[in-house]
Image (cartoon, rainbow, N blue to C red; front, side, top):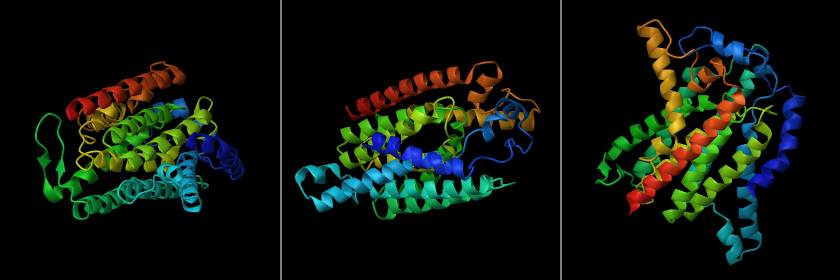
Length: 341
């Protein structure tokens, strides 16, 4: 249903994105160390101003519409079937849905600032502050209201950390936010995030968190609708309104499928999101190598752009990342099932 909704709203979204020229007015990026990203700019200088940003609206917009329609149906036609379809519940989906919306709004604001003439968007410090602020509030809610004080570790006893669940969740959110840089080639991030949320759909369902599983499934549907129009040549790019929404919501879903669901959502996150981990690590390695050894490990970071720089066509990078994302996803689900016994 969410896929169909996403397909239907895309022409409207596209119309306004092109009408208001919602793309960067000045191409080029700056590396994490503050220097000009010359290799990246040579690879993507023209593409940055070819298509509009904010394509992530299709993802969270279709999720919100689907959620609202199902709640409306359950309210107007209260039957067992409509009540079952409506997955908005205080115990399972209020927090992840609110997080998705909060991340979407923050990212949308950043995108709007970026598309202004001469605009550069929110500073990295501001975006980090937003992520830390949101994750602190969410982590505090998990600790104080839901009583989450431990992390399940496969095949051993749970790790009891008490109130430290708050800074732990903040670190997880920061790491996931950093992985948003995987949105760099047409179709890449959509395929990877679809595999990740599909995995958590299965995990939540197995744990009996049916509403949370349905929520994850709606995100998959929204991503697939976005991906339909994002394959090369992309009609639009996901950018921050999509990546901030997805990465922040993913952290919440992972935590909810942990001790709350009697599962191992946090422990399997590095496996299911293996490509996100690799993407972040490649950036860290590059920055440290340039700072302390004054040389680069990769031609350009993150890693998927390095493959482009050595001559791989963008579509080849994307397809191979899709394959790997499915493998990581299956591995994570298998690990979660094995740990459950």
